[in-house]
Amino acid sequence: MLRFAFSRGAALAVAAGVLCFDAVGASAVAQDAGYDPYATQGSASSGSVFPYFSPTPVSSARWVATVSANVNVGPSFIGSDKYTFTPYPLISIRRGGQARRPSIPGDGFQLDLLNHEYLSFGPVGRYKSGRYFANDRKLFGLRKLPWTVEGGAFVEVWPTHNLRGRVEARHGFRDEDGWVVDLAADFVQPFGQFTFTVGPRASWASGKSMRNTFGVNEYEASLNNLVFPQHGLYAYKPESGFQSAGAATSLAYRLNDAWSATATASYSRLVGDAGRSPIVRRLGGERNQFNFGLTAAYSFGVN
Image (cartoon, rainbow, N blue to C red; front, side, top):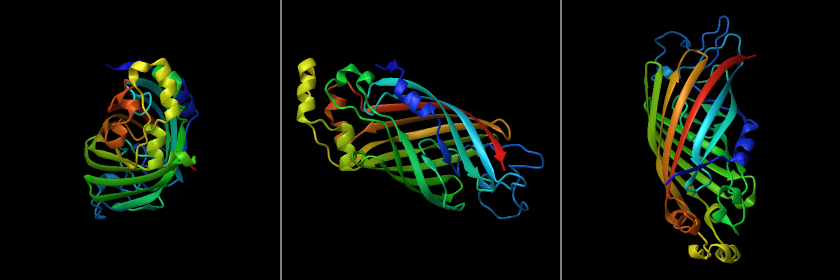
């Protein structure tokens, strides 16, 4: 049974706003006098096999900024069976004239050092929510898992205009956060003003990351068992490996050159040592994790 709660900590942390340089952000860009962001650069016979990835010529704007209002419904923490409703704003900026690619769920905030129609790579960042006693009283005795910001690098490959592969490797700003590597593949299909995406997802975590997120030491187990002896919580030290596998999909609608809306949904199942964690198995957690999101975005040129 799904139970819902509102995570004030997560909402406040994200509601402060995130400023990122996103070369493949929202598909809408601004209207400006003499500025046609969706016109094809050069003639129609330029030969690009990616017509909807065409570079956007900018006559007056050096940057394209996108301001979005977002709503997300997802687990209160990784492995939780309680769901949190989180609204948050987001600001992204990309260079004027860069390739316009569809926004795909699960991608971190990025800056392209190389932005080719077949290949792009560069630094990437992601906000990761924490785990607190306020999220679930059954977490009594367990240390809190503070929120963090992960930074690293990504590589993205488009072998055809409909297929994308992506790898992100990230590490939190604390040593105990460890490394996480996310793998994604997507089928992308535009039709009219809509763009549909769907594809598999997998996530690998280092030993530090797994122990930080899913581990339980002897002291924590003993404290929890004093209050909830029926859980039979035990010490657990997971090792590195794949922590989840699943799929993600999205449907974006471009209302006009400035406004767009996107609906996203994703599913992941905790696997391996992550799925065997007593936090998931003994404390009423859930191996099946769902996320749903809605975004409304407005874009404009910035000189």
